[in-house]
Length: 73
Image (tube, rainbow, N blue to C red; front, side):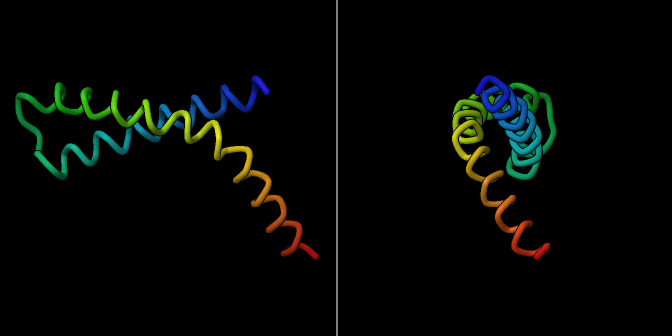
């Protein structure tokens, strides 16, 4: 169980960090206030993405295993 939680934390943190940075650039561009806007967006994204990754991660792995098993038959 601990590994699933840690995996979700890593995935949620990485994905939210990268995506919020890119989306902030797309929406507002890079200027003097970019880093502040990005960090604000990241905190919001992280608080949503990480619990979702913790919950969805094991389900996604189960479905991926089933699909791979089906394909390999």
